[in-house]
Image: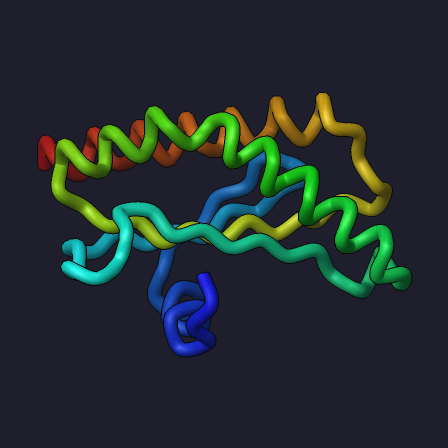
Length: 122
């Protein structure tokens, strides 16, 4: 996600849940013809990570874990003809290892997948 307007809308109107140490903000909408079914953003705050090196490392870890596990969610969104905006914020206090990030990202994506299934049946 690159649009500041879209990110602000996501934080104001979207819903959220936590999979410690990741906070997930999400918002479903009907798809636009010029955007993909799934848009993703990631952040790590400066409060606990003063050095950009640490923040960048955390964001790289989350992005890679997301990239490897997003396929199932993308297929469900495409089948349901829905558009999902997602933003992950790392809220932990220490730089995590990849195993933890991969596991927590997988749990978060599974919850999002369940949300999409529920919204299509409702």
